[in-house]
Picture 1 (cartoon, helix red, strand yellow):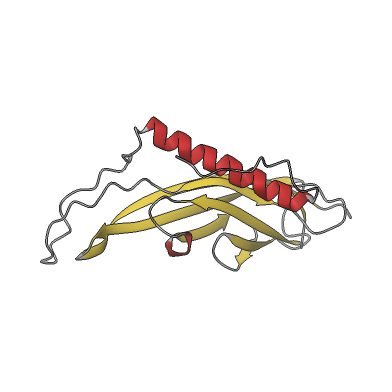
Picture 2 (cartoon, rainbow, N blue to C red; picture 1 turned 90 degrees about the horizontal axis):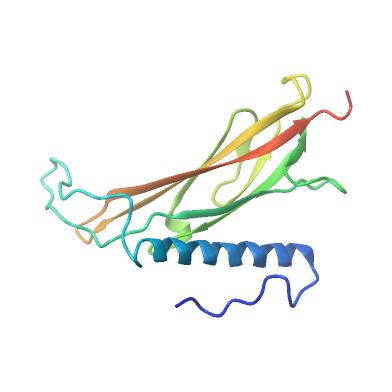
Amino acid sequence: MLPHVVHPCKETAEPRLRAQRIRLHIGAALLATAFATCGGHGSPTQPTNDVGSGGGSACTPATNAPPIIASIGVQGTKPNEPADFAEVGESIPITAVVLDAETPIDRLQLQWTANVGRFSGSGASVTWEAPPKGSVVTPMDVTVTLNVRENYGCPDVPSAFQNNVAATHTISLHDSNS
């Protein structure tokens, strides 16, 4: 049974806190749905008993559901800037809500990629740096991809198996000064 969840729109008028509560509420609902769909356990990834030819012992790990990427949020820092919007040369924060039933989030491996621009930082909150003015034709859609890898296994081979999930998000890139 899930713990009591405060309704995401109550108890605060501050928009960022309300948005965070909504994301957590949605994430909890997605996690509950995933477990209910799988009968409370199970995983689409079926590990094998072979841990390789390195002389290790064979193992069958406990059932391990893959991580869930509940959301990816993109919000620039300029006044009145809409979500999922960036100007050429701008650096904008990107935050993901990632859930996993078995592995602490700080032990998951998160990798961010995009068809243009570059990232700084690591983990669930990073900064995407849009390409400089004149280096791309605008307006254009930028596809940001988050890949999450979870390593798991048995006591004697703790990283013998992996769950890999990915999610994409689109940012509208513009050059308002041209």
